[in-house]
View (tube, rainbow, N blue to C red):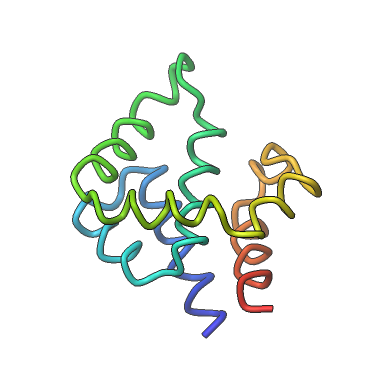
Length: 115
């Protein structure tokens, strides 16, 4: 299970980041993942591509299209904000640590979810 979650989590992250997934394809992947993983993927992208930076426009547009089109996905990720994993992450890490290593980030989150 873990390998699939990591692979698909990275596929979602990279697809939104690089523009290689349509909103409907990204939704299909996200809808089948643990909501906490999806929350962290979205958070990673929002923090890495903060508004106002030129390289952020495309990523934030794709993220907005995905979350604006599929309300159920936003509800799931909102609920995941209450997961104890969020508090653990905020106490132990800074998202910036993982900007150069998205694969390590997704692996760590999946390990924590499944652990």
